[in-house]
Amino acid sequence: MYASRSPNNKRYTSFDDVLARFPQPARDGMPDGVIHLGFEDREPCDIAVESGVARVVPSGENEARASVRCSSGTFLELVSYRADFRTLVQDGRLAVEGDLSFALGIYSLLLKTNSEAIEYFRTVDTMPRGEPLREVPRVRRPTRGQVLDVLARNTPLIAAGMMEDWRALQWTPERVASEYGDTTVVLERQVSISMRELVARMCDVSPNTDRPPYVNGCQLPDAMFPDVQPSPWFSPRDFLPPQLWMGAAARENPSTWLHRDGGPVFLGQVFGRKRVVLFCPDQTPYMYSASVSLNTELIDPDHFDRARYPLLARAVRTECIIEPGDILVLPLGWYHCVWALSPNISVAHVFANNATWSG
Ligand SMILES: O=C(O)CCC(=O)C(=O)O
Image (cartoon, rainbow, N blue to C red; front, side):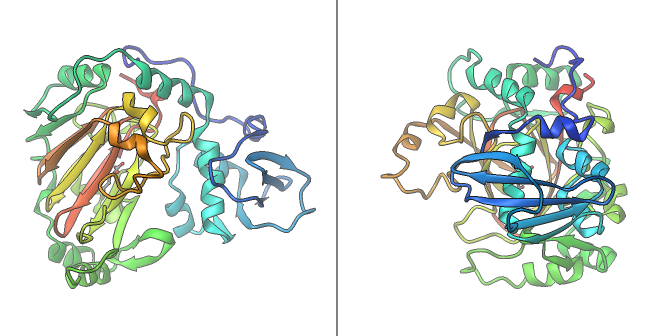
């Protein structure tokens, strides 16, 4: 599937393409409600979730559980994986009111049930494989050919020694606070915080804190861009803007819950160590993912309700530890759950879109 560039492109070209996606099944567990999409440059649109189905309904007739305001161009960028939700909110290009989780649920519905994406997931979920992977191979300075090979075989790899030209490898929380202290980043639930305050809070966490502050993939602030290099193997155009993952260890809890992403991920470890638990896409039958999608109901594969999720006990997992200078190459469809083992900084590059990858 990585052998050639697909002529098809997952990008929506018009708002009518978005509307054509409805009706469609809502995600498992999504509550009923209406989202009001108010555009600066076109008619508003309301989408309702009722009894597990999302459909377009006449605008303004129902009380909205959440409402979003932006230009239609921004909206198309957002749902085409061309812009990051948090960054748009932070930049004031998109405003959300009401139930944020509901708004994010609708957003993920638009992103993730795209028929091409479903086809990609189906392909990796069902491709023939040999023995389960016992250990993630660590390769020093793999070539582009080696990386293409692991992507084609859909197996992960730890690439060591590829970040030597990242100035970010010199980052420590203290250094980041002193160089980028006024820079704002976004924590979970859209809370903005200055880097200075984040570092102060993450370095002052009691070992018993279950959920210390964690920046979960917000767009790397512009000021920090020059310190990281895009993947050495591909063009910067193939990636979403780099994402920052930064914070303290959360006792036994994962820093980032179990999930999989819309494209292969290159997770560059900058400071501290991380434990990553991985499940191959062929384990999907045991993962309680809502049909073929990115999300699973499970959030922590170490602690879960065995009566409710009995199949997870059958899933084969692989674990690895990544250290500063490692890039974890995660091909499409691999579920991953991540624990920061200490104060931690990572930068991820995610393929923007399988279909526009220009290998
Ligand atoms: O480093 C983390 O906490 C999570 C990274 C991740 O899940 C991702 O890049 O998809």
